[in-house]
Image (tube, rainbow, N blue to C red; front, side, top):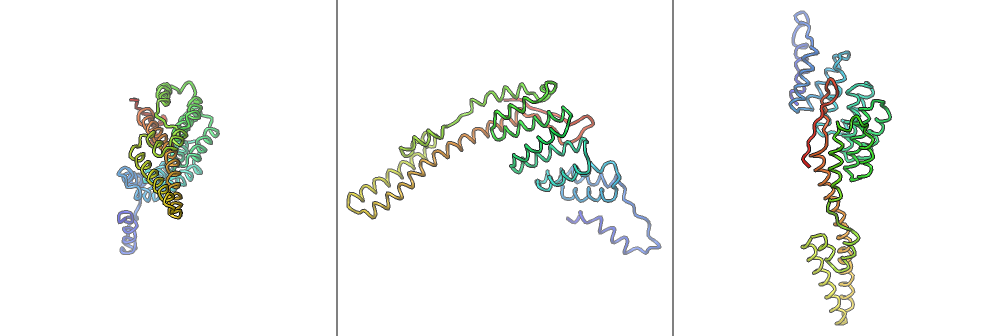
Amino acid sequence: MIRYFLLPAILSFYFFSVPVSQSAALTIDAQRQFQFAESYFSKGEYFLAIGEYKRFIYFFPQDQRIEKARFQISMSFFLSGRFPDAIASFKNLLEAHQDTELSLKSHFMISQCYLELKDHGRALATLLNLTRMTGDVNVQDEAYYNIGWVYLEVASWEKADLYFGKISPGNQQKYQLKRLSDALGKKNLIPQKNPHLAGFLSIIPGAGYFYLERYQDALIAFLLNTGFGFAAYESFADDNYGLGGLLAFVGMGFYAGNIYGAISSAHKYNRNQNEQFIKKLNDNVRINISAEPRARGFQLSFNYAF
């Protein structure tokens, strides 16, 4: 924080402490100011970097690196986890710059921000809007590739396949679609549990949990339900109808919870298995497109160990 206000403090001291007749003109060099901001960015000091990039924009509004400075401000918000601020900043860049390499990259980064916020709907809308805005096949293919991965994140296999299939033949090798297709073919091997079966088996307390391989929960459910049932039966047998009714009422709650819990656990089990499969896909098959702009597009890298 101290360094963030260092330059204004020096300027104030200089102008107010040195007589006007003896003062020399203090100039801010565009190159050094931009490098100063870049140094903070490269060290991960994003809050300070944002301030120095903004200072650069203010003092040098005609510099050819203005768009890069705006992009770096947006990336600083993104990399520091301030995703709503990053979205607003990328959108400001898009208002000022259109049909440039960084403006196109900003569309993809906005989508990524929405994904970080778990807003899959807006992430998809951003990418779909980009496919309609541009006539560049390469940009459209990159958008289709990212749309496919958004659908994969929510285990919507058919829609993911649909958008991967929209990628032009000339770019299918670039995105390693054959390898991706082979890996996706293993989705039928993902272990799954049937929620309906889990609920049906839970008619016998604990059987649903046993089916889900949650043996401790199965034992607890069985003991609780049989215990309440036996206690209620004994109370009624002893003509203690008040206590018997209370125990039966509480026992029915545990019995219903045993059924609902088994169904819910089956869904959770399936979700976890899908997430593990998708994470493995993401780690080993997905092509990563670098956020760092290059003269001829964006750097591509991929791993494949599926």
